Image 1: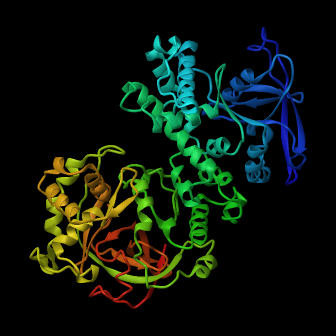
Image 2: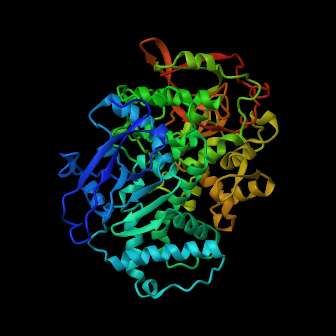
Length: 589
């Protein structure tokens, strides 16, 4: 068993160029202390789905390894001297659970202490030539040169001009659509932590700094959608988006909560690794129980612990948002309804993740309600229940379905806006389905506006967003006029930002009406009988569903929602009629 400060390193024996492709791979192995600051290179790669059908000679023993790693080691061998490497498949006893837990805790140090990290992208596919791949790397170098020199009029070399089709195929092949390195969760921290990184694709190499520079060119110059051929722009996008996200993670500009959700679409064979594989980019000590990297617990237990620790770290309930609508075929067994389920990427039938994340701090629904009881949340650690205090805003009485895009990230403004008349008719109904006048005053918002104006504000979430989905400004009269045009199917005459804001509110969400006359937008699975609550610590309301549990009564958690006229603290201020301000305690299971 290795000590807490120890790791294994392999020394990859050299092989002359004439036999490098066929000579058996031989390695030595040694145990070193990280505190002694040994020099080594780390490797990030994809294990692959194939069985360990290849092998290496490790300290005189034949050790099975994956074909992916075997190909990498053939490429990594030097002709005249050994090469010291840290590679998880050879340096960790994978069947020793205790050692695996210990070594996973050291990942931050292992990757941040290496002299460089080799990003192994695998061998080139058979439909590509070396010239195709070289053209792709040369193109990225040209983009990097634009960033470094400021000269946007760089002439492309002949190797690119004469082989655009091959270059596009190569860019697509090395990007996230076809290369699994971009889609594994472990590669996030492995690419973020090292000081120096080099991409290797077959025999070709490219410094990661070129990718960072190229991503600046892609977002900040004319080398973008308007000037590049469509095929080139799309192929580049599958590389540049991930490069930018990785840079943000490396710079620490995103919160723990944001990092967990940003990378939730990445895959891992073990659901626990959807958490443990990201801890290296999270500030140590913030999630003390999660950071134990305990592989003996169930994923449901881990996800509940993570969610509770994020609430404690955040000091509020933002970690209960955003809600990805779970694909029931891949949900985690026994996962509490309130706990984040990272097994399901849940990209379909859910509102845009960033629309939700960016929108949380626009609001202050829990104002005047007092502080969340973090001591109680801490005392419930390890339990399935999450106990919260708050005020019930109302019970959902009617629901009007929202627009479900046919594919992920579809911005179909006309189809969304076509639902507005039906939404409006529902919003003008109250108890007994009696239709109200447009001039009837709305109960929320302190009675400041009519029911019609309340609906127009609801469609925009009472704020205008920019194209990055961030807050732009509060809504104004002309914005409400634009929503009326959209209701009349005249959206083509409405500014893009207005249509974009409304789409983000309506896509994959339902309109609902409460029994006390409030209107809201929320989870696509809400139904009559569900309740809307404002909890202490939550800047937005939440929809929950009464359910019978072994302990008696309780609730299942649906997700956060928007309710017109309660988002700025109006409930706590006592200016929303028919809302009982008596604080109650809710148990979520």
